[in-house]
Amino acid sequence: MFFIPNIKKGVSVAGLVGFFVLSWLFTTLPDMIDRHTATIISVPDTMLSCTKNEDCSYVETSCSSCCHYKGVRADQVDLFYNQELYPACESYSGAVCDCIAEDMYPVCMKGRCKLRPPKPPAPVYNQ
Picture 1 (cartoon, rainbow, N blue to C red):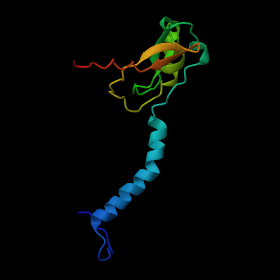
Picture 2: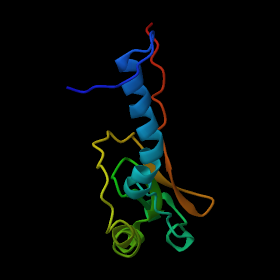
Picture 3: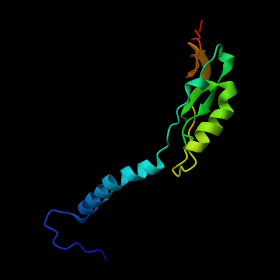
Picture 4: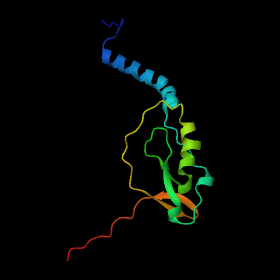
């Protein structure tokens, strides 16, 4: 049985345990986050240039596969994964997300590939 000596009146064991757990979390959690953070990988500017929407696609940019998508030139997708994401995430040991990606589509805006949400459907009026 767990025994805590010299407990003063009005101090519960649950309160002390909660205090120790929170203390441990605040001292340990930052180190855990550093090792297991889903690093977001930047897409190099050289992979973003475009002239029309058809030039663009998208890539996952986090080691955790947690719906961190970015627009990228379609012919650069494999290169991004092989030269940027996979090497950067090689030692990643954190969680892997099971997220539901938002509906986004790649577009060319001002000469750079980006992701945009779909346009909302036109309102339907009952007559």
